[in-house]
Length: 248
Ligand code: AP5
Ligand code: MG
Image (tube, rainbow, N blue to C red; front, side, top):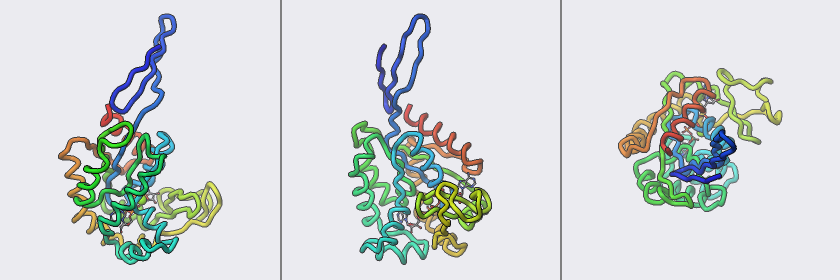
């Protein structure tokens, strides 16, 4: 029996008689950036990766909304910005990410959902997150791509469970019982920024400030893009394949 390592993976080779079974014991995903416009499915996919690889989803949007609903000083500062569909300042978001990354559940990796979103945030992330942590793995980026009309449908139809945070869509991924969470029966809620008007502003912010971030990671080469206009499970498989290739 021998144990092999490589960037991002540890594998155990079991030799028994003439048969050799190779079993991957532990895949180290490291830090993963999940990029894409509003509604491409970053949250949906991050939750799937999280349960497969046992690493946390860190959504800067979710962290900001939690601060808003708890009425913290940060939440009070951020609320109006979120409601307008604009971006919160880099310093505030970088600090929030830095604080979250001090938690021990990020040791084997984490999925940053919706961060970085500006070139300033990307510079901070490259400086502070790449090659850090026990596995010292570099950042890798996967961008999910979906056309405008489909995004609008996804945003206006989205519903979320306020308790377990499951994501639904009344047109595309409806719950079994109208407006109730399949898992815990809680009435689903709608995000206050999920209107057509705020979506358009979020798209403008994406094109102006986040599209250059996608190009930044594309140019660095530790980057793949995935067609997000497929069923959820097919997108998950494509994202996982992309991460494995980028870590091989
Ligand atoms: P954030 O919460 O990150 O919003 P977003 O980027 O606009 O993305 P969404 O959460 O709307 O979409 P998603 O890609 O997660 O899609 P989901 O999986 O839910 O940010 C909100 C705000 O916070 C920003 O506007 C900004 O103000 C601020 N902010 C956040 N991060 C910041 C940062 N780094 N810097 C500065 N400001 C920041 O899916 C969407 C819908 O589609 C769901 O209904 C789902 O069921 C459905 N769906 C998903 N996949 C599929 C599929 N394959 N087929 C059919 N339906 C699907
Ligand atoms: Mg999201």
